[in-house]
Image (cartoon, rainbow, N blue to C red; front, side, top):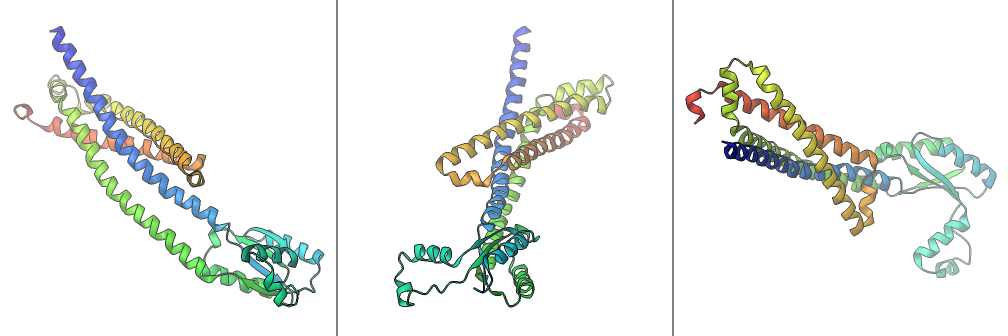
Length: 294
């Protein structure tokens, strides 16, 4: 009898561990996809604030006045940053880009580039329609002093469309994985409860209510979801660390908020799926006839 009891306990432990392992692997994949989707958004925000827009002002505007204009532009709701660039500084930047100053010699050593204020946009205003509205507002506000708002319109369309396609593709993959994950976790829990079907029916036969029978199984399901979510979260963190060692760019895709969002999400998802699957599996064994248990 003791050997039979020991074997039964070992079987339950094995089933519990197998359930945890199955849930962890599913949550790990879901966590990786979720992190990548959120990471793309973080990367997008970082890149958005690196796109510079040149506001070229007439040479008659003195440095003091341009300093005040720079401060005004920096405080606007659509501005992420703004700084003044003199004609000479602009020429040095251009000269470095072309690899020499031969073109300046052709222009009789006259600097053709006007002084400017360089601004970058907040992420919520990074759209072509918003940029055109901002351009018109700035031209009206600094009429006679602002000569040109220089930017490439195609950047807005190409960048936003590229990010959207990437996010939509990942969301489709995430939806497919979610469907597979629900099925795998559900089957794993059903198999684990299958070994306890006689215990469930025995409790029912001695007068235990369905609510009383469900309670320990639900708490067990919550525990499985929490443990699996934490383990999967640690595995996601390890994957991020490995990717960072491979390419530091991956570090820009995450921050502490993103990581805890992913961690919290997979824990809640693990609890939701385990509790839901446990409920439906228990309902089956609570309703099934004794003869059908075999």
